[in-house]
Length: 192
Image (cartoon, rainbow, N blue to C red; front, side, top):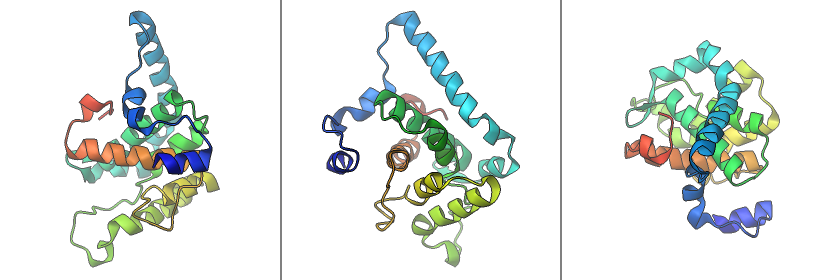
């Protein structure tokens, strides 16, 4: 993965081994750390607050995603970790596009755990369904559409992330899914 990032984004100093540690752990001393955290959380809240006024987005809270995490909680977790990755690694991705695509990346609005033959290949098909719903309800940009369509890479082998935003969401989604499945959300920097 680090070779891919180096080739795509030309960052020769990228060290994937320590990424997760560097993302969640901020090492400013005492009071400065609390203030920085409050500012970071306030900026993040400003980016996501409008989604919580949308009935379509709130419907995601009716469906379970991983373990005891709802789809809405998962999307907020992915948005938060994506936001932190971008900030901590100074990737300079477009914050608004990054957080919007992360909040909408699983906007498929059905229970994928139910035995429905049409949803048998959920892992492969839900990015398109989520993207169609995001375009229909929010009129998202091409960059955001590409990020949503490619968030399941490498499972969706032909949908390779082409932007910083898409690659960040792809990595954050895998990280959040793993942590949610083993139910250690609070210990690994997730919000829910």
